[in-house]
Amino acid sequence: MITETPKPSVERRMEFLRLLRKAAVKVAEDPDLCGCCASVSYAVFAIFGGEFIEGEVEGGPHFWNRLPDGTEVDLTASQFGHHCAVFSPIVEGETADRPELMHPAHIAFLAQMIKALKTI
Image 1 (cartoon, helix red, strand yellow):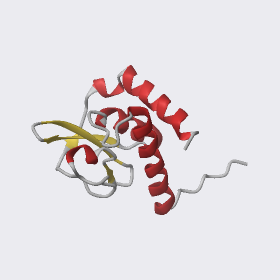
Image 2 (image 1 turned 30 degrees about the horizontal axis):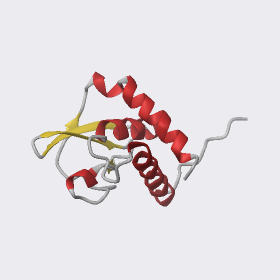
Image 3 (image 1 turned 180 degrees about the vertical axis):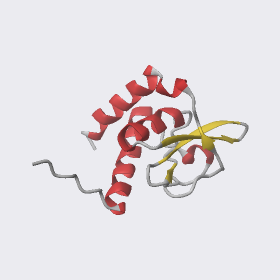
């Protein structure tokens, strides 16, 4: 008999996102995660699904996530002087259909984040 895995509560999901951010900071060796938005967004996408979102911040592209339930998550907002935005993005954005987001470097970053999670 196959049983359905219960959905995690909002609190559990938030805690996991905080741990994921800590792992990213450890891998990047940068508390603000400057230049890591695509890699971190790929990690969130790989774990939670949903969509990549792209917007322009300070004249350049920035990526974050929209989870399947519609919640927008930006774990790298601190690179622009904002707190980690879990429920509201720092700018408006659109779904990003960019193949380079699946770049091997992002996959490698995810693998390093998973390894780092084991030490947190």
